[in-house]
Length: 247
Length: 282
Ligand SMILES: Nc1ncnc2c1ncn2[C@@H]1O[C@H](COP(=O)(O)OP(=O)(O)O)[C@@H](O)[C@H]1O
Ligand SMILES: [Mg+2]
Image (cartoon, rainbow over all chains, first blue to last red; front, side, top):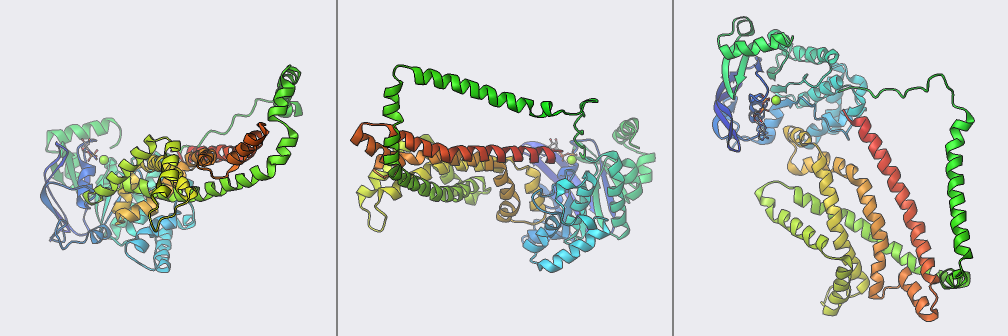
């Protein structure tokens, strides 16, 4: 049984059709990268998976249970699926430690001592041990994004969704964040990653999906998709990326 | 994103001399002093000055009336302080009502909108008269009947409408990504507001709220129309008895002594706030 099973997902924003009949499975411990031009619906797809936005048709199942199933507690969903955003979205008025332990303490009612101990453990694992008591604005963009990843990891999610987590970073800071993600992959984390870093996608992905106009046009292992794209639109997209020097 | 602000440029090869450092301040102070002296000379030498002085600036009258006016001003300040606390909380609640999502909260949203429209649309003086005289006249059992209570209530209702709008602008100014992040962590709507949105919103609007507080400090004087013996009322009583207006000047001095420091404090906090935002800006 796939970890995540998306079938015939269709999503409108008002009257605008944003996702058209998307079907995609992600197996446990698998890493799937989503690529595609801006506005193709990548972020929307991730947000549908953890119910940040509602969809109209189709289904999304986690371990075989639809996320819209009445027996599915939404808190459980947010615990089992973590998400990290392009703009980090850390809470600026809380310290790094409070950012990370907010959900464990207030949503999942873990004791403060216990959640802080685990948060500190994760922070040092991600080379952020010195920043527990800093405020987000005192950190570099790369450090903030790594804190955001820790915040998503602290609930011990089964799946991690990453939405262009390096897109807002200065080039010299991207590497650290990508290294963290590669590390998570080694630990067997199931991940669905939206990225513009094609080299990274090639390294880290088991499968790459090319999204265009709300549809998955091509889905293949990275070597095949990058070297031998079948769909002319994929070829066009990759051509543009190569011209921009990103591959 | 992590761009740092450029270091201030050093003035090429020139160290600051004492003259450069204090020159501007000295010039400012002297020029203000000269202008003040000229105006003063003009006023004092005017033909009507002795009459004006006797009517408005009679030291004797001021000294005589000062204890009463000061006592009245104490009432102004207590009404002001209590109202401030109530307004700060009630307005926050109104703003929260208005920002709630979901069909179940529609009644609260509508209540908040109607309330704000109503109380922002009516002159404070009208409300003070209506509540201060009207409600006690009803003699409803179980409700306070003093015009002090209902007059203050009118001010609170009126100012809460403005303060609620200020809070709302602060809530709206918090980036939507904050709500999304909180939701993705599993926080409920209330938890999101309480832990994530409101602390940022309140911090954003403190300067504007302080401006309202200064305005309220003056508007408490409206309650004097109800016969409450605040500073203005005490001054008026004296004026009515002696036909001398120095008592009003004494009251004016007290108001200025209270509002000007508040205004400076507001400026200072607003400046700190701007600096903080510039630093946090990415
Ligand atoms: N909240 C929203 N309301 C209306 N339209 C939206 C909203 N969010 C995204 N869209 C639209 O949906 C489409 C897909 O957006 P998005 O999923 O953000 O694309 P991507 O992440 O691939 O750049 C775009 O055309 C965008 O304009
Ligand atoms: Mg996007």
